[in-house]
Structure formats: C-alpha cells, structure tokens
Length: 114
Length: 112
Image 1 (cartoon, each protein chain N blue to C red):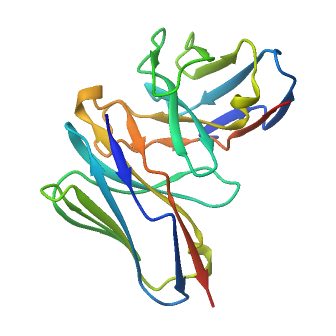
Image 2 (cartoon, chains in turn brown, yellow; image 1 turned 45 degrees about the vertical axis):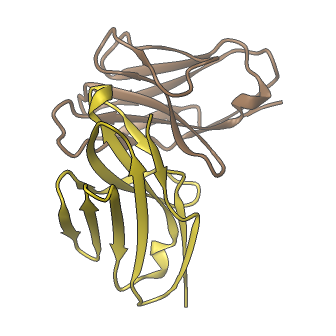
C-alpha cells in the first residue's frame, strides 16, 4: 500500500516549456486534489476532482489544467510554464464519506521555472 | 471567501506545553482540521473538530468554539520531533464540503 505517490520529485523547466505532473493513489479514494505551496503562503488549492471524469477549479487555477481519466490518477498540466509557477506541488486524496475530511498527501514535486 | 489567522512562529521548550491558535472567517463553516508538516515533508492529518469542545489524541489536543470562530491545537510534553509547521484548515459547506482552505501555518521550534 503505497498511499499517494507523485512523479517526478524534482523538475527544472525553462519559461514556456510544458510538463505534466502525475499523482497516483491506491486507496480507492473518490476525491483528489492538487495544491501548491509557496513560502509563507500555506497550501493553496489549484484544482480538484470528486470522481473519475470530473474536475473543478480551486483557488488558483490559472495556468494549469487537470485530467482524471482513471480513478486512481490525477494529472496536473502546465502548458506554458512561467517563473511564478515555481513552487512545491502536493497531490492529496480523500475518501468520499470521510467525516473528518482527512486528506492524504503525496511527497510533493519541487518545480523550478527559470 | 474564507480566511484563517494563525501565528507565524512559536518557540517552546522541550517537555513544555504549547498552544497554537487559529481564528477563521467563513459563512459556511463545517469543521476545523489541523495538519503537521516537517521541513521537506508532506502535510499529515492530526485532528478534526466538527463540534465545539476538545478532542484528544495522545499528546495532542484540539479545541473548537464555533461561536467565537476560534480553535487551537495543544501540544503537551513537547519533544524535539514536534518541531514542524502546523496548519489549521476549514471545511466550508458552501463549497460542497469537498474543499479545505488552509491557514498560512505556524512554525513551531522546540528548543532543549
């Protein structure tokens, strides 16, 4: 039981390049989330999904796209990376009926855009 | 929207007790959670309060007062490994209760 995994762990991009971050969970969770974390800013929600084939915007969705083609995977795409997207990206998942709304986080992807 | 306020830094002595406060503003409050994050690590769930009162889990306790829009995390018998950032987060029913909004975090330093 690996929990939530993220690929890659580190990445350096040049401005304008594109990339996809992959999140996978093996807990059969319905809900999945993408956050970014910047120093002093806490965790901010980018996009989330409440089930396979569904996605919704969070607090800071601009410049990102997501897809949830399979229940266990949630992909985050950057079409044209900008230095402002330098951040640590966390994926999380949650059971649909979790009263405490406990979210399980992946180890993070550290992205630098030059 | 929602907003949460928590102190940015707290320092405490090993073996002591520390309280981290969190005040929030949201019109659709559904619960307050606490997460711990060590440097370079991922956030991990600590506790949840859906109703007023105290929830205890080992050395950690969390309190909620919905009438005051206030909660706190209490850490007892502090250990060096408790040095980490602690985030409060609110669950907002208006967002279908799917989302959490996080505070900016409190960095706790435990000193010998």
